[in-house]
Image (cartoon, rainbow, N blue to C red; front, side, top):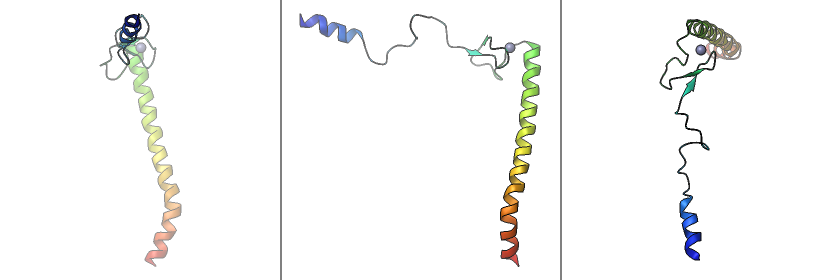
Length: 91
Ligand SMILES: [Zn+2]
């Protein structure tokens, strides 16, 4: 009587479910551009489509440009605060 309950409890171990309910899809990643499945180890994470590779290139270039501008603006912004303090300290 008690055995059945114990067996049931044992059959449901905590944290031992490698896959989510039923699907046997191996671990994979998605292309950042077209979202088709690609190899997890793919780096950069795009498929082999030339259009996707070019699009990623374009995105990264614009991202880099954006980051550079952000840095410049932040530098200027910081300088408007720090600059006068430094000048006063020096003078
Ligand atoms: Zn793609």
